[in-house]
Structure formats: C-alpha cells, structure tokens
Length: 196
Ligand code: ADP
Image (tube, rainbow, N blue to C red):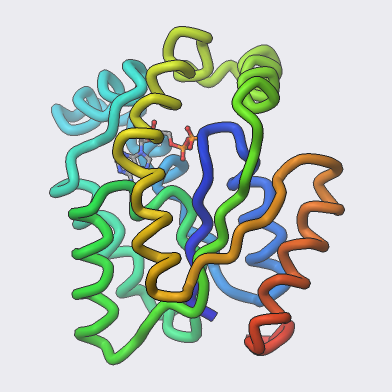
C-alpha cells in the first residue's frame, strides 16, 4: 500500500499514521518529525528549519522534496509507505508523482482526516501543554491553519479528481477513527494487513 494522510494541523494525522503503519506493515514517514529531529543540529540549515517551523510556515519545496526522495529511496519503502505531512504544496505533489512514476509505482489512496477547526485548536493547545511543541502557540496555530487552507487543502481536490481521496471523520475516540480508516481503505479493494 502506498498511502498519504492529509488533514489540517491537529486533525490527528500522526496518531492515525502510527496505527495505519502497524496495520498494513508499512513505514510511516512524517516530514514534521523529520524536521523536528533536524532542528537541533548546529547547522545553517537547522537554524533555517527552526525559524520557519516556529513561524508556522512551510519549509521550502526544494529542501522538503530532497529529504522525502532520500527517505523513499530506502529499502523499507519498497513494499509501500505512508506519508504524513507530505505533499503539502502543488510542487510537492508534482515531485512525488515524478518520483513514483520513475519507479513504475503509484499511490493507492489518499486519506483525508476531516476535523472541525475549533476542535483541532483545542487539541493543539492541549498538546502544547503536554509536549511543549514550539509551534503549538495559539498565534502560530492560526498561521498554520491559514497556510494549510491556502496551500494544502486545494490538493485534496486534485486527489479526489484522480479517484484517490478517502475522507474520514477525524472526531471521536482514536480507535473509532482508526476503525473507520481501516474500513474505508479495505473497502476500496486494497489488500488487508500484510506481514511485509
Ligand atoms: P501539523 O500538525 O501542523 O500538520 P507537522 O508535524 O506535520 O504538523 O509539521 C510541522 C511543521 O513542519 C509545519 O508547520 C512545517 O513548518 C514543517 N513541514 C512539515 N511537512 C512539510 C512539508 N511537506 N513541506 C513544508 N514544510 C513542512
């Protein structure tokens, strides 16, 4: 299975990505996690990543595309993968298409987690209190929501036009959401859980 998971900040992508990864035995690759891990280095690039993330904006397509291409080229992605937080821009969609096309591969589905704005702000503020993520301040959350609405939400239509979009209600208990997800993905005629 080659999957994407999309949705506004706070929709629960990371949580559901981990469950999908386990269920279908595919690696979950989160660009947000990769950038958070990179941030701590004492390099000019890390400094740039820190500043952009703290502002709520997006890292450049050039850097992001290169990092994802490197990751997808690793052996564990041969049998499938789940991308969480990528692509987020039209240029990233194009780059991913080229990358997969060059390998004779294609996406099986794009999961969109649907969640109410007020609900997600509440979740993010709660996460700020427990995890202390620098970009979970209320002001930055608003910027991230706006950037998502401007740059990333329109991508859903592209995937819908290709017949790949699977919209799932992201509200409710974590296990309810994942049950909906698995049902929707299995219902599309894809393979069920695999051992690798
Ligand atoms: P969120 O819950 O806001 O979706 P993520 O952990 O996915 O959080 O991403 C956090 C930040 O990492 C983003 O606000 C952005 O600065 C950066 N980032 C993650 N993925 C991308 C991407 N595909 N393109 C550009 N920037 C990205």
